[in-house]
Image (cartoon, rainbow, N blue to C red; front, side, top):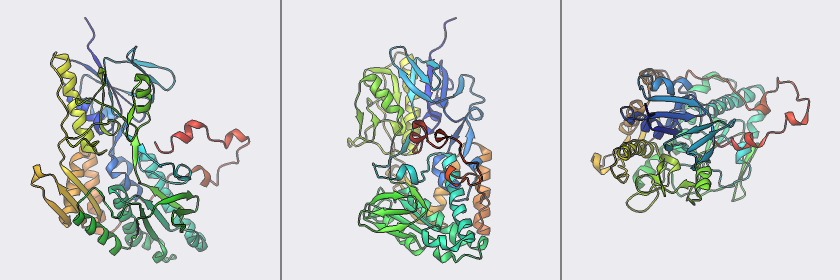
Length: 451
């Protein structure tokens, strides 16, 4: 009996998951490869970092999601090579996996724009581990300040968020609430008026992709709640205990959250080099209108790694909805290829944008297809909560997140205030390394800082 075509999907993000789901009843075998055995709901990583949710609330085991899909298999691994002539991808360790169709849905990593010190000294929000590390670091700074109040002058209680897009705004709003409403009771020996959240943004406003009225509302709420907004400012260097602006100002801080931009996952460069293709802006793969790669109808790219264009000729935004719709489209394209039908161009339907600034304060701008409504304040905040509950995978995750949000709303408390992980340079109880090689990070470790 001849084997069925195999569709290999790289990445268990939004695009990869929805491509696999849409192939549930197709005459193919689906293999999804990811370095983690779980899907992370990345829009809520900042809530893990600010103690509002546990890691388990926003992650779900991939095998659990597809346990009822007979044609699905999962492989935990890290794709490091691509061999188009043999139709194989190479995993770390040397194993090769064959495919008939390949979907690259590896997502994005943060882009430091070449700013000195970012890789070594800044935190990013692209994984559960990094969110937990940031939470532990922030809480650890409060413990350090409680033990030595002089550390406050060195920036122990100052958090600098670089970037005022949705991630930066939501992070800043959550941090000031954590400081003002929760940690004040935990640390009565500290003057929490010394705790600061500084947002540094190169542009002239926050939430630059939103309308002017929503930008002004978000800026007003952030300032009213105590966030120090530095608009029109650019970071020149990130040091271990300070951020240096291009203006020359030095902001003492021991916590820098980098939310200034993203670039496509490096696997896209591996694929492009193997095919001899040039990359688009943001290191995205060049794709045909149907999201296939030029000259290779068996290869597709979706989401943040794909250089798909909208009707205006601009690259589509690197947001979850683009990945979700792209994943579904690629699944349909594969089925049409198997049926001998021509592929169709991908058409992205913009549903709108949402962001919250904190309790009872949010902005939601729906697309014209959804009446073009603009919601601000409590309604915008409520709409954001509802949408994120709908897209969270798994009933348990939805129930747990809803319970945590309700509990926090009623009690002004956050239950996930645990110091679980710390950076290696703060593990003071660890024995000193015995050789130089023990303290020298390898190239792979350095390359993973922003991934």
